[in-house]
Length: 97
Image (tube, rainbow, N blue to C red; front, side, top):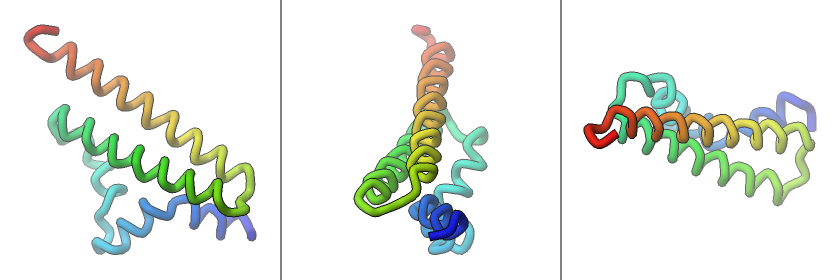
C-alpha cells in the first residue's frame, strides 16, 4: 500500500461523510465551528472524536503503516485538547464561572 492510498483510508469516515453529503459532512461542520454555540461546538468535536476513534479501531484491525496509526493518534489528541479548551471557554463564559 502506498502512502496516498493509506492516507485516503485513514480519513475514511470524514471523507466518506463529506462525499455522501455533496461536500458537507464533518469536514464542512468543523470548518464552521467558530460560528456555533458552545454546546454545538462541544457536540461537533465529540462527533469528530467518535469518528477518529472508530477509524482507529479499523486501522488497528487491518495491516496499516505505523505512520497512519500515529497520524490518527495525533488527530485524536488534537481534538481532545480542543474539547478541553471548549469546555473551559464555556465554563468561563457561564454566569457561575
